[in-house]
Image 1 (cartoon, helix red, strand yellow):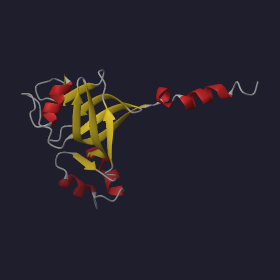
Image 2: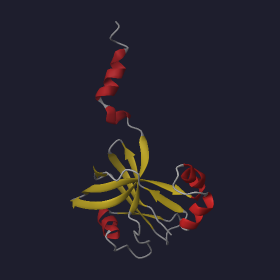
Image 3: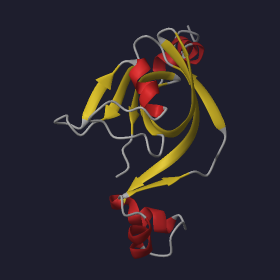
Image 4: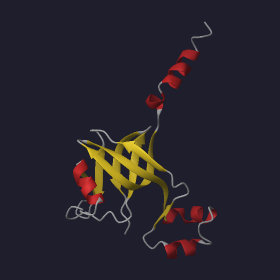
Length: 154
């Protein structure tokens, strides 16, 4: 009888991907290899901070004051990389790809994998912003890439 309460724990340990939390991870997209409808992404994970995070960035020691942060980051976004280890993740046929586009009411356009890769290579569709910093926001469930979205830096 003592084994029964341990069964859910054992099941959890044997199936970690089933219990993985969905998270957002920012990364610099360093490389893409397309194979049919899937891709292998080479990524450098980073932290992205907005103006609302200025005090936190100062506390981390990256800037001496909030004013220095604002002056150095007129776009309102700051990318911090403290671990330049490259990682690879594979997309699947269900992965959603999105670009930042001026001509969309919400500023985002869902595109096929080929269009996303083309934009990353410097050939953004008309009405979409260039991939200037090559930063993406990845929506992950464990190691499964649910969504890859371009982060626009003004």
